[in-house]
Amino acid sequence: MSDQNGYEPPKVWVWDQEGAGAWAKINRPVSGATHEKELPQGKHPLQLYSLATPNGQKVTILLEELLELGVKDAEYDAWLIKIGDGEQFSSGFVEVNPNSKIPALFDKDRGIRVFESGAICLYLAEKFGHFLPTDIAHRTEVLNWLFWLQGSAPYLGGGFGHFYSYAPFKIEYAIDRFTMEAKRQLDVLEKELAKNRYLGGDEYTVADMVTWPWYGNLALGKQYDAGEFLSVEDYVNVRRWANEILERPAVQRGRMVNRVKGELSEQLHERHDASDFDLRTEDKLQS
Image 1 (spheres, rainbow, N blue to C red):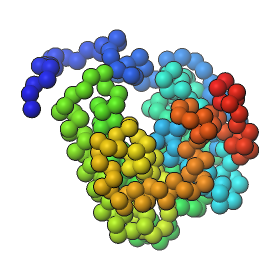
Image 2: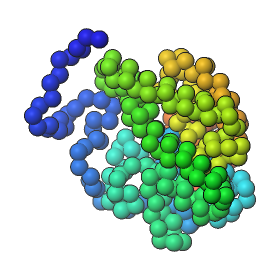
Image 3: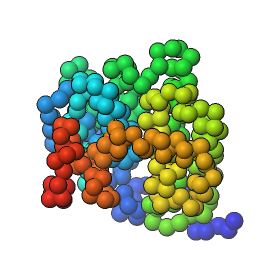
């Protein structure tokens, strides 16, 4: 492999505020709020502030699955956070999540903030007593996969996805490095799902819900437009699992919530009541 650009790191890194790339205008090396703005609150105890990225979909899928089971206390308000506009840096959002990443959850009943998508899903599964086994061996195996996802997905999103889809120019070394890791992770899932219907066993759990938006979408060719590049057809067990989960009505609803891209039929910018899915109109979506 040739040296593609001859870049030499400086002795001391300096932030280039006019840097290139899709997110250059909002990325910065410091934390905290950039502007004062309170977050809205709706009528339900659970207030979700999010966007339908894979991390955002994890939480809305779980909430919709809980509601599908008849857990009425899982009703929620889902407020849209436009990360491209820097809304995650408002004072209100930073108060709920000092890391300024979606999703963030505020439980009004308990006065508890929850941030980081895996933590939110674990919190909700424990609060409502569903989708997390009580048997210690099964529970531990499910948590193994939940935390595997939390550690693995950054290599897929910030690694492969960034350099393959979003970087301002293609870097062979970076794409090769993270493609290798993405395929290794798919192979980990392929071998697990050859043995079990779901991650950690034959029961659908929170582990599947947090993993599907990243690797299910990838295996079905819905992520980064990279299906052919990654030869996703080779991962037959992952695709079987991904298709089975996609058929669930709660998953179909959950992946719509806070979605602002793609087909209008798959978007619901904000969700404050179950009836919002039936009341969607093109005018409302485009507003």
